[in-house]
Each structure stands twice: as C-alpha cells, then as structure tokens.
Image (cartoon, rainbow, N blue to C red; front, side, top):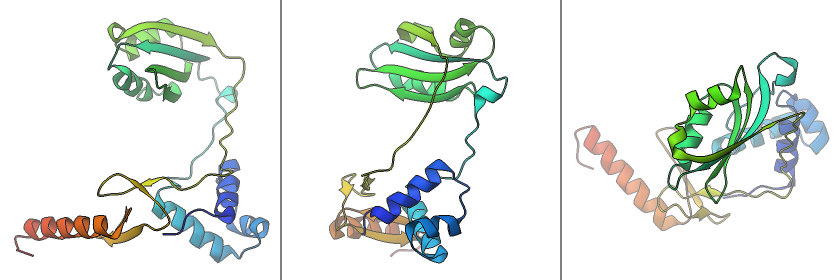
Length: 200
C-alpha cells in the first residue's frame, strides 16, 4: 500500500487552509492535472485521512458566548467520561486529554461559566478545575512531514507501505500483512454466509 508523498502533503495543506479550494487551483500548485488531484483526494478519503470537508467558522465574529480555556483534573478513570460530556456540549469547540488524565477544552460559553460546567460535567468526578478567559486563539494544523498511521482491521498493528487492502461490501479494509487479510476476509465471508442463512 502506497504511503503519503509530498504531493499528498501539499494537497492536504491546501485543503487544510481552505477546504473549498478548487481542484484546478490545487492542481496548478502541485503541477498535476485536476483529475489526478481528484483521484488523490478520493484515495485520501478512502484511507480515512480526509473525513469530511467542513466550514471553519470564526466564532469571534458571532455572539456565541465567552471564549474560555478549561482545564479539568479528572478522578482516576474518569477522564474519558468527562471528555465525552464536554465534547457533546455545543459550546465546546475542541477537547483534548493529556497522558496524565487532565481534560482540556476550548469553549464559547453563553452566560455563567461555572453554571455551564456544573450542567455539562459530573463535577463529582473532577478533582479540580481551572478556567482561563481567552483574548484570542489560532489553530494551525500542519501536514508537513506526516505519514500514514492506519491500524490493521484484524490485529490493530500499524499498516505500513507493505500492507494489504481488501474491499468488502463496498468498504475498504486495511491490513498489516497478507495473513491478517486472509483471516479477516475468511471470518467476514463466514459471518456474511451465516447472516444469509448459508454455509460458506
């Protein structure tokens, strides 16, 4: 399986800067034809590198609430639940979890911040919280020097350029080796046959 090359990275950088960039403009910048760019973008979507094309809303231009950065020190084992609660709130723009189990969130909170956190998060599962008022933020994701990090559908190992892929029922699955591919496909076909009421 082919990994990412410099052309893929340039395409990703262009789309990260503006997801509405016409393929013809990207093609001119990477010295390729528009159909080649379209094929590469389709491949990146198939690989799951590009999940969707979205609108980047500048919330500072909208009356959406007070911009805050929240740090929550979750109880042991509670970080995922705290993160999910925050991620589900429409006021929260971005959530991260540190290796130490601290939950970090960037939000635009309407009204009282403390009341918002009490409504959103089970505070019994939080040891401490720190809220900082933000004056400005900037998010600049980088695609320079990135490589693929796709997990094998069978064993979970990283799929390298020597990996395999198989299309089953219109969905593409990736594997670290041919053995994993064979096991996965055999089990998939067996389950599909069982579901159809037949033996393989």
